[in-house]
Length: 404
Image (cartoon, rainbow, N blue to C red):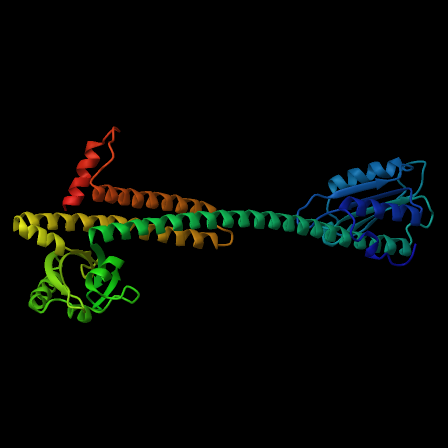
């Protein structure tokens, strides 16, 4: 046997094949009667044990008893004259500190066994095999980790694809809902808006607001000073005072005035606003509706004028409630969609949170669809007949909300 044993002899082999190869090398090279190898995984993996030779049964029995008592060795031990009539010598060598890498044991009836060369070759071969054993464990762990990673990546890709499809579907539904709302506003000549008193800017204008006021819908909502110039000169001071009082008193306002388009056309407008307060009680913004009542006003002037005002007020309040009910689920659904994408981008993705966010999106879209359906039926003035059960308590609660 050469003076060194390259670890490449066992490179790439399975752990048990490494132990078996080591035993075979030792038996054949040193002409041993008994060879025993135990290779251990310092990280806690299962150990591998291989034994060869049965010509010296007494040594094998002694070795098993010895290892059961001295599982971890701090130094090598040479055992002489075991077995009564059969004379020989055995040696037990720990692999690593306190045999953390395992144990190599050998026995032979040669008179000079074990020589220094025998002991050196046993130690070198054992340590090379232990290194290969640990490498094999690492390779196995790495392979399993790669397999698990690939499986996780596939699962993640499937989840991402499913999420993207669901988000695309929900986005399409929201766009349809927005289109329905825009159509309802166009048909009813009613737009929704939001105004920020602190900056003097309109935070939001629906498309119908641009049409009602004569501003370009491709642009941004104008500042209040610019919008104010479109108010009829006879109505401007009164309108500013109404709005100033509403801001000061943090109160709802209900007001009518005339808008003068650039071409000189005059439209009668009815506006309803509601303050949104911060936790500290400050006015964050006003939200509300704007309705073109020109044609209605002309028709009402041909009939009774306290009836015209009542109808406009009722419709304005109803539209304000509808705008609020539609804008809320749309905004909530968008936030839930953004949350789902954020949970998915975590490492690892929080799929339970994603599932919950998607469920919330479905509920929000259904709510918006129900409101839009109610608007369409209201505009058509031809509600479909229904014979399902009615929860009278819920109906009363909804009437109370609309009345407020």
